Structures are given as structure tokens and as C-alpha cells.
Length: 637
Image 1 (cartoon, helix red, strand yellow):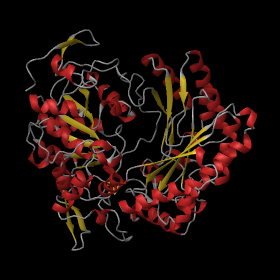
Image 2: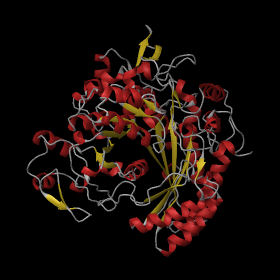
Image 3: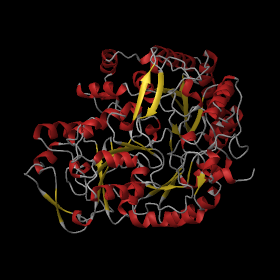
Image 4: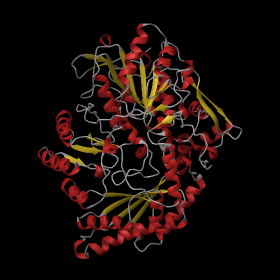
């Protein structure tokens, strides 16, 4: 039961509403505005007037979740259905988590402040492997049994979506359903099925059985897996007739026919991405071999510029945001970008609204645009070469030459920029010491380009700053590198040391700053990314020992994870350091993400031969995404 000592607040609709947390608790926690709801554009419905209540959860802190476009899209979609009320749920921060356990306060949804256990569905978006323990925190605080097999008729249906569902197996024990693909296409059918089963008193298991037969839905309880003596998968199979052996992802085929949230919820507090967001396209043409998003969101599908212009004006009118950001995996590749940007510069300028253009390739057009929309004295430019040498950039199919990088940097320095951020990965397949040294040498060349480009008398006392950051490569499912070996923690740290040493030897070392990520968490991310069902027990035990917020470095306990893996008879090296043969059955092989395994194998073999593949606009690579019959696959080249 919710605590009886409730205070109340005035909701945006003018009616009085209860709060799940009393004044005493709100005064004792950090950022209480995370938990009170009532934000501008939040949706309130009469619970008695809806058939289905859907709690949409982002298993991280409020500021992170409210910055996620997918949450706003699905929140808007669900609440456009007259028979559904969708509310938001986030992970309580560690201070409130402790108080909720002490005071026996169940997890609640923001809009109604009602317990999550009262809802029909708990939908959880799974964006990052290191949030897996937070999913168990959500279930635990909501008083929902952690294991799907132990849930009764009065428990919400727990459904997961997002990029991590492209290998859902480590979480299979905890979810009733996984939704594979884009949420706009199949939820209406699923909810109607739920209403039908509920009306006929068919029960939880029969609803799940019928749901398992809908396209795009994976219900783990109707599948089983056997293993060989070496720990690899022997067989993965459905348990009942009529349950599909392969589950194909759901995809929006026409981006202009689906709705877009032009009245997104506006937080009371500053969040990580505190701006209006305009999604211009989905998918990416580039085919970087390390990038999961570039594969699972194929094919590229664009929104019409006229549609986007209308959305932009509505977003600004309905939110009051002072910044508008264009969302895409590769904004430079959007065919309508010049027209859209010209319109936004003109209209946003009238309203004193800034424009943010992430994911741009640094060329003359992009720099011209940024010079119009940014204060060059305050901004920095970002390049993502990913690898230090051209050889390794060919291996990963980055499609970016050193010449293009240096030309872009030179244009930037001519335009007044003095700070450049460079993003690289360490531990990529086939990487050598020469490739690592190339990170330092490329950073040095960019610094030198500044001194060659900007005369001393025009520098105004400014020193160019090159910030080189390295993350550690984690192989992901449905990429050509899904078979690759991942480095050990010791290998990663040695590579970071080599990079730092090489930078210290450069002529322009004083202009270069070097940052690197933690190695421990990168290895564990690799374990979870390519793991199987046996990891479910590990995740549960680690959570029960006290782990959550593993995505936050200060709360991650690597020794606890290693100790628990050993307790369960599992080795991290089996999931990470081991190189997989091409004929091995992978835990995610039952999923059809649109790109074929044959294509991924071809790209893996081309990578080992250091061969590049043209992007989708230049030449179709036969990846399989044309089977969806939409987007760039219909374009004549």
C-alpha cells in the first residue's frame, strides 16, 4: 500500500492530486522534482475512463530518461489512444531508494502517483547493458516478482523494448514479452489483444501465448535452449506448435504517416538534453562495422522537410525550449538538410532559439551552418575518426580519410574554432601498436594544422586545444564484429597507456588533452552484450548483493560481478575474449533484424582483408533490408 501520510499538489489540469512522497521525504532527498510529476504537457486521464494503464519506465535517473526521444514518442503514441493511459516511471536515485525500502513505499508512476503494481503493463526501455540491475531495482521496488515465471494474474505484464532487446537472452528470466523493433507499429494490436483476453477471463499465460504469435513479439517462456559441453548453444527452439522459430523486428515503413510528439513533456528541472528534439530520419547509410545502431535501424527512412518544418514550429510553440536539436545517426546524410536548415535558421532566429546539429560530418557546408547557429568562441567541434590509422579506419569501414579530417580541421580553424574533440576506440579488431600510435600522430597533425592556418597575430592569445578521448571497443550483436574477440581489462589498460605515452612524445603535446574510459565496465558490458540465458542468475545475484546504477562509475563494483560469475560457474572470457567461429549458434540468432547473417559474415571477412564497402547511397551491399520495401532501398542509384 502507498504510505497513508500523503501530501497533495495542484496538477496542471487544475485538479488536486496526491503525492506518493510526503513533505518530510521530499525535503530529505536530492532533486525532489524528479518524483512529483505534474510537468507541462504531461497527460492526466481519469483511470475509470480507460481500459488499460501502461507504466513506461526508463531504468535510470529522471534526467537521463527525460532526455530520451523514444520515451516521448511512445508516451505520446499511447496517450493518443482513448482506452490507454500511459504514465512515466524512472529509477529512484540511491537516496530515495533507501528511504522507499525503509518506509515501505512502493514504486509509483509520476502522473497519478499510483503504485506501478496496479498497472496492466510495465514497459521498460532497455538502452544500455549496464542498466540491467536497475531493471531489477524497478521490479523489486514495484513489488513485482523478479522472475516472470513467479508472477500471478494480478501482476502487470512486463514488456521490454529498445536496442538491447536485439539480444534479450540475459534478461529472459525477468520479462514476459520483448518487443523487437520500432514501437509505433504493433502496440495497438497487442493492447487490443490484452483487452480481448481480459474480457474473456483467459488468464495471463493464454494472453502471452497469443501475444507470442504476433509479429515482432518474443515471449521467452515459450522457448528453450540447450548447450554443448563447451558452453556454446546446441539448440534454441520454441516449446509449442504455432510459436514462431524466428522473430522479425518491427519497422516503420513511412515516417510521414506516423505521429510525432509535438507536445513533449517539459521537465521542471534541467535534464541532460534540455531542448526540443526533431527526428529527421532513422537509419544510417554508412555501414560502420562496429556500430549496432547502423545495422538494426536499417534501412534509412527520411521525413519530408515540409513535415519537419511544421513539427519544428509546433515543438517550439508547445514547449518554450530555447534550443532545437536535429536527431539522426548521421544528420549530414539527410537529403533535405540544406532546405531544412535554411528554414530553421530563419525561423529560429526570429524567436532567439538556438539550433543544435549533432552527428554532422565536418565539411564546408556543415561548418558554414554551424558558424551561423553557434557562438564560435564558446563551441567546440567534434570529429569521430574512431581509429588512428587509415588502415584501421578501412577495417571498421569508417569512410573517413585523414585528408578529409585535416581539411575539415583547417576549415574550422579558418572559421574561428580553437577547440576540437576527437573520439577514438581502442581494442578494435586487428589493431596494432602502429594504429594506437596513429591516435597521437593524428591529434598532433590537427594541432599543427591550427598553427599552419592561423597566423600568430590573429590567435589573440588563444591556444588550440585538442581533446582526444578513447573508449574501449565492445563487440555487439548484429554487427560484422559480433564474432570478434574483445580485449581483456589488462589489454585495454595497456593500450590506454600506449596512447598516453605516444601523445606525450608529440611536438604539440601541450595542445593535446587525453581522456580514456574505465576498462572494468567495458569488459562487463561485453559479457552482457553477447551473453546467453545463463547470465540471468548472475544479474539477479549481483542485484541481491546490492548492485544497481552500474552505469554510474561510482556505484559499479567489478569484483562483485566477477565473484558472482565464478559462483555461477561462468567465465567472462567465454563471452568476451573468446573468438567465435562463424558457424556457432549465437544467442540472438532467432531474431531477424533485417540484415542477414550472410551479409554480416561478408563484412567481417572484408574487414579482415582491410577492404571498404560503399555506403547505401553509392551502392547497395545486399544486406537484406530491402525486404522491408521502404526507404533508401527503393532509391535508384
